[in-house]
Amino acid sequence: MDWYNVLTGNEHGEFHKEKNGGFKQRKTYLKEAIMSALSWKKNLETGIEWQDSEHQELFGKINALLDAMLGCRDEEEVFNLVKLLDSSMQVHFRAEEQVMGEIDYTERNAHNAEHVQFKKLMLKIKRDLIEGISPEHIFKTQQKTIEWFLNHIRKSDKKLGEFIKSRAAA
Ligand SMILES: [Fe+2]
Ligand SMILES: [Fe+2]
Image (tube, rainbow, N blue to C red; front, side, top):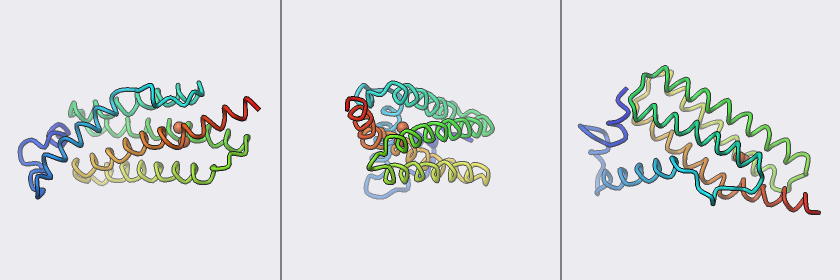
């Protein structure tokens, strides 16, 4: 699978066919998304040690997956990295969900619903990989998972972190 062409839109990738300068836009978008996924930023910290270290670990796994895609590694390796990311995410979600239950977090249901959203995305990636769906399509889904991850940490996990801190201080 030639992930590199998928990412850069080289040769005759689907991105060339997009109208109204869509290709250029998409390329910039992809580059930005990849760059932001590749670096951990201070503003992603929730201030809760276990949460931050788990998030950074998950970041590493997302990066490993992107590396495998960019390096055009074989499908089995990509699939194994997807599975690894998926299982690590499940463990992380369970940890957060347990804490939310313990501290009776008011926005628990909405937070859990976002976790479910991510699980569905991972399921879709796995299904697409098994079915041999085009790399471009899979990469788009992968982009969604990165976006989800960044948005979820920035908004929901940080909010949860604040709540945990306020409970600890009370
Ligand atoms: Fe979360
Ligand atoms: Fe989280």
